[in-house]
Length: 123
Image 1: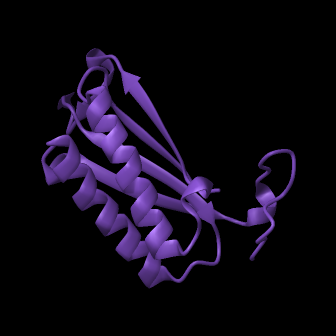
Image 2: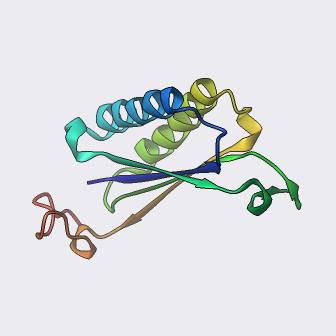
């Protein structure tokens, strides 16, 4: 039940790029975390250009915030973040220096999906 929110400037990603990016995020997470692809959720949030800044100036970054249950090894989480950043830059055409990936973790017991706690509760 990982959730990835991709925040960008409205119109900076075409529907085709979003499709490709969502598929890439799903595949990467699935491969590294060993979960079925249907567990992975990807959401896109487009912000008006006047609301997005990089270094105090208007910019067009791609910010990817991921949530996963706590308990994954740190080296796997680091590999995941690096792979997602590379795929996001390649897919979107947004330069690597304007792509940020943050993976946040909390106990699985803190989440509910389809009205119940995750079956692989972990720590």
